[in-house]
Length: 388
Image (cartoon, rainbow, N blue to C red; front, top):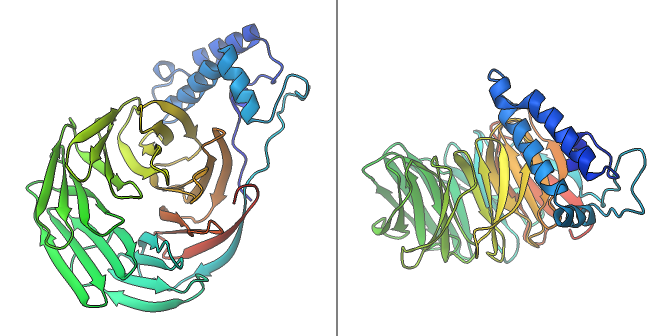
C-alpha cells in the first residue's frame, strides 16, 4: 500500500483547529530551525523549507485555508481534536503482474488509445508489443542503431525516438516496414519526445535550443529559441498541437507545434526541469524538477495550481490518468508517486523497486498502471477507488 503523505497541518505540526496565530508561531519556529542558510550542509533543507513555505502560504490565508480544508473533506465541525484530518478515500493499487522479459533497463512505454495495446522499449532498442491484458508479449521489434527513449503508439505501428550525444534517431514502424533516420544537431541532445500522432519528433539540446523534426524525413521543421540554459525535458500534448520544453533555467515554454511559435512561458519552478506531462485535455501541465517537486500549471494562464513533494530523489517520468484527476510520478528513489491534482493531495508512494523508475503510464481505460526502469522489470498494478 502507498505510504501516506503529510498534510499542511502536519508539516507545520499544528492541529486543523489551530488559530491563525498558532500557525504563524509554528511557521516562525520551524523556519528558524530549518532555514537553508542555517543548515548549509543539509541536502534536504531547501525541500523542507519549500514545504513549510507552501503550508504557511495556504493556511495563513483564510480563503485558501477554507478551500484547502474542503479538499481534505474537513470542516470546522468535524475537525479531529487529536490533530489529524479526515482524509478522502485513497487510490488502491494492487500489484498483479511482474514481467522479466526485457533484457536491459526499460526507458519508454506507450499505449494505443484504441484496443489498449502496450508498447515498451529497453536500452537494447527492442520494442515489445503486449496483448490487451498486459500479460504476455505478442511481438518483438528489434531496432538497429540509436537508443530509444520515447515511444508513440500509432494505429498502424509506432514511432520510436532517442538520442546519444550529437545523434538523434527515429524509427517509424508500420505494416509497410520500418523507416529509419538519423539527425545530427550542432549541440548535444539531452531530451527527445515522439509526437502522439507520429508526425514529428522534438528534441532539446545543451545549446539552449529545441527542435521539431519531421518524423518521416528527419529534417528540421522548426528551431525553437528562448531558453537561457540547456533544454532538459520535452513533451507533447495529447493532440500533438502543443510542445512543452523545460530547461535548466527553471522555466517551461509552450509552443505551437504546427507553427513553431511560442504560446506562453511558465516560471516559478525554481530548479532544472526533469520531466513534463500534459493533462489529457491539455488544460494543465505537470512539471517535475531537480528539487524533487512536482508543480501543476494552468496552460491557459501559466498560473501555479498546486505543488507536490514526497520523493527522495529526482523524478524521471510523469503520466496522467486518462480521466485526468490522478498523476503518477516515477523517481530515482525507486518509488511511484500518486497525486490527486484536483484536490491538491498526495495519495502516497508505492515502493516499486530498489532501482530507478524511468517510465510510468496508465492503460487507456484507467484500470491499470505500469512502471519500468533500471531493474528491467515491468510491473502492473490494478487500480481501485474513486474515479478509477
